[in-house]
Length: 221
Ligand code: ZN
Image (cartoon, rainbow, N blue to C red; front, top):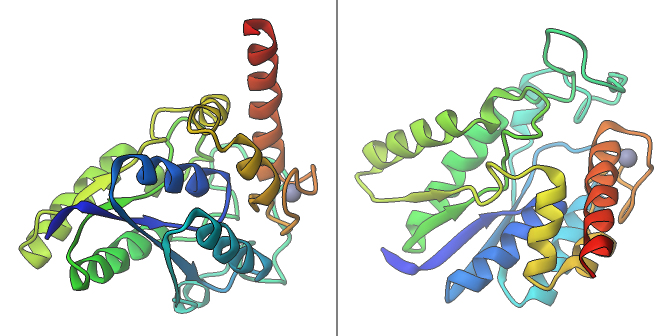
């Protein structure tokens, strides 16, 4: 397995695009893998390909739409109306059960085939909407399990784990890709690129972080 190779789980959103450029900074050879899991907005996949190609990394996509079919949720089921805000004491219906477990596990098999040791995912428990599979303990636990499952030494990297959205913008800026992340990525649950629809939970979170960061940056200048 090669230590200088990394595979990024890449949706083409703000977080995974920041992770892609983070990986480019630290690893010689970078791969981006985009999962198609029955998202309502296939535009995300096209944007992911475009960003990866302009970043000069290997790009691949994989159809894992069985994940969306296993459960009813607002990201993959057109009959489910998305929760506008996080409901008290339960998971929002944008939660796709098992998604990160499947993504990371499949990515590990994919990486093993190509001799890639490092796997990068943009999950964060700071701003998470209560998703259990975005927590640090989950990722660490899966890392151990994957190594035992395949007798390998994978290293799962989560550069955004302890960053809030404002700090994630700061990281993109530090990596010199603030404009790319701002204009080319799709974070919006309604599939609108860049600043998005402005109304869904993902857009609200992204905008709050951006406004906070731009405020701090102006003060510093
Ligand atoms: Zn939106």
